[in-house]
Length: 265
Length: 268
Image 1 (cartoon, rainbow over the protein chains, first blue to last red):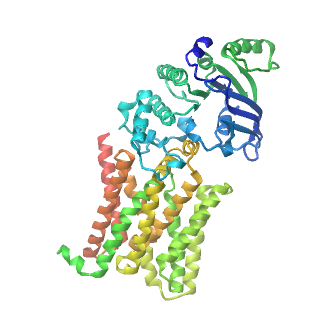
Image 2 (cartoon, each protein chain N blue to C red):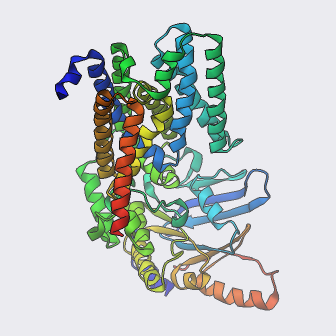
Image 3 (cartoon, rainbow over the protein chains, first blue to last red):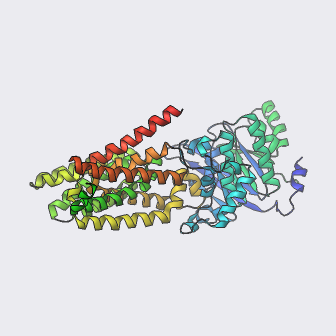
């Protein structure tokens, strides 16, 4: 199954590191370490799922990678550039945990929300161009939400809102997409649609996907790599290895720590 | 009969100033309301009162001193919030009570302008001078042109601060610009509605428009309409019925809000 996933896009170089996390430790002010000495690399075209129990630091790690939080030690490089010097944010798409950031009564329609994704530091002074409008349309069509363009964001279902936020993240044609607990509060059918969409984004568009989720069972069916986070990085495996390892973890107790990164070519 | 109002120079000045303020207040208000900053307008108004007291004491145009103190205080509030040593709303409380105390002390130092002060508390178009109209106009031009530059990133930061940051929007700069513009808007609105009713002018038309559940752009346009209707009709009513201008304007705004609220709750 993994071989089949890879075969479809030859232009993606699976050996190229696009994200490098080096010895990251992070704590909130006055608190204990949430993350401790985490090191990993993510390659172009990867589809990686970060799993772990609640409060294990998955979202924190994601935010450190995106420079939303500054680690006490260690560094993160995006496309070879340290995050604090990184300026090329158009190459990155981010779908935040929706419930946290989202105001249900916000007077903005779907079109306006996706258009926001086109704003960046460079474009402060520029008017909305024809190019912007086309990018919005294209992104909304990718997630099959174009017909809802005039609907208020708060009037959509949870799953539809999530598709709009994915469109917003896709609107600059990024190379990497970060998704934080994207399926929270979404029914099974919508989840199926959602994961099919992600497979399409990963395989057909060649976009690297980095997903945080507590739904381990589902992730093992979808992603290429599983990274277990529980303050430290406790495993970095293919889903098949993860499944067999987790059985042996149950058999042998918690001493087993497997940190490997396999490549299937 | 309606033309009678234009025979008085102060009424023309009042209407001019009122219309300018009515246009500016909602476009800054929508960002404040959506960011749950509504009370910052109130705080900056009290800060402006201290500025007005200083202006009256020194014999300088009080709108200018109000502007100065509001701008300085807005930067102080933003700094205090960013330091995370004080909660956001506590920072507002500190500035609100502190500046009110300062205003009262200055006023007790210098007796004799209490009547004048009353018009700054509740707004009075009779006291709008042509100098005020110019100050208001210049401030309005600055606020609107800055907003048109920062409109897009402001909307993004207001909707989703983290995603905006990841898109490379300079969030801190945008936040500072917003609070500075709020300070300017408050200062320019003082002669019309007065210190105590400013937040009503900035907040209520936006709240009314938000109930219509339209797109962001449409919400701004509706807020502008409600604001202009309230301010113009408020000035005219208060002139003919000899009522407090600021109070009348705010009551009309509240009537519009209640009317929409009532109709919307009937609908569902």
